[in-house]
Length: 280
Ligand SMILES: *[C@@H]1O[C@H](CO)[C@@H](O)[C@H](O)[C@H]1NC(C)=O
Ligand SMILES: *[C@@H]1O[C@H](CO)[C@@H](O)[C@H](O)[C@H]1NC(C)=O
Ligand SMILES: *[C@@H]1O[C@H](CO)[C@@H](O)[C@H](O)[C@H]1NC(C)=O
View 1 (tube, rainbow, N blue to C red):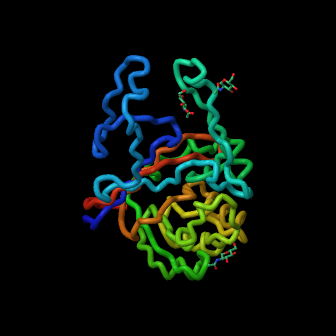
View 2: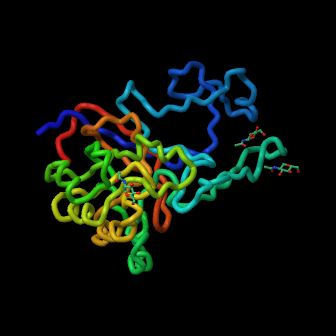
View 3: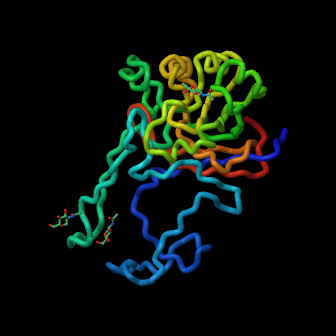
């Protein structure tokens, strides 16, 4: 059986490495003009600007991660992540290269939660992000718009009529409309799963990847209970802080490529909408 379209979320490893590519035209996929010679890329053009894209192939591939910047929000902070990148060696200071160090809370920006995030025994036993199933992180996915006037309760979940067999769902909520991920102060009024909504999903669907558009899949009022319901089986992967701004509800293929840490990992992702795909 073929379905209409698929969404591909290709995740690249942290989008913070220093990039300065010379592009001869905005359409070029690869930089030009940078030879092996030291300094070959420096000052060779007045218009030396990297091309940053979030949509590729005329809307076939979308990056659905948030870029890190000092205002990127992180749970429990009004200040955002602050200075997360430090230049340790600089070409300006005579070094042969720029060398930066990254320091960042692992639940900042777009990331996934590992089972060990909220279960001490899972953490101690090593259920970190490295233990997550790559088959769950890649494959057909639904992007679903949810009612804007409620948190994700059992009633709301039931009303969405997500078919059995669907394994990956990204929930687009009021959080996207409110552009909460673009505000540096953590906002506890975000929309997320209530405990009964999480339980309904576990009991009545085959969903193994739950994505949402703010820093937590669980509503603040049910922060621990809803996380516990999701993470207990160690089978459900939670993807948080997704950028779903211009993404229409529909069927896609999602690709999440991750960098690992104990409880969470950062993702940078692309998603592709196209026209083949035969299973969830
Ligand atoms: C470059 O050198 C200046 C002067 O010694 C120093 O203040 C600055 O921190 C250095 N920066 C880097 C990135 O090395
Ligand atoms: C890398 O070095 C160049 C040349 O010294 C400097 O202008 C630039 O700001 C550095 N990159 C970063 C990320 O700071
Ligand atoms: C969702 O729950 C939060 C508390 O966790 C609350 O502040 C917010 O108003 C609720 N949102 C909606 C749309 O009901």
